[in-house]
Length: 146
Image 1 (cartoon, rainbow, N blue to C red):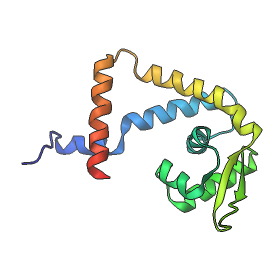
Image 2: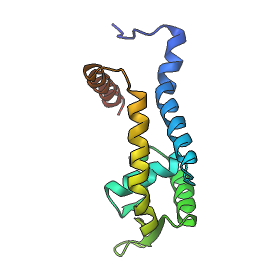
Image 3: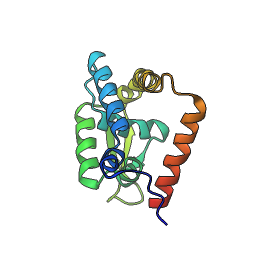
Image 4: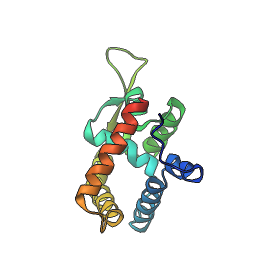
C-alpha cells in the first residue's frame, strides 16, 4: 500500500523543493549585497573544496549532484575568478584535481557566515524537534531513491 500522503497539486511543490529554492535565492541576495561576485552554484563547489581540497572533477560531480559539463563550466568560471586552479593528477593525467587558491580560501569565513545567517532566517520559529524530524524524513527519502 502506497505511503503517499500528498494530494496531486502538492506533489509538484514537494519535488521542486520550494524551500531549497527560497534559501538559495536568499543566500544569493546576501552574496550580491556583500559585493561577492559568486553564484550559489559556484559556492557549492567551493564549499566541497573547503571540506576537502584537491577533489577531482568527478568527485565534485558526485558531491554536488551535477553532471560533468556543468562542473567543467563552474570550475572554468571559478578559475577565471582566480578562486581555484586545476592540477593534473600525477598518477593519471586524464584526471584534474581542483585546488583552492588563497582568494578561494579567503571567501570561506564570509560566505559561511552568510549561509548560517540565511539558515537561521529560514528556520526562525521552527522547533528543534521538527527540524530533526524533517532531516530524518528527507534522509529517508534520499536513501530510498539512491
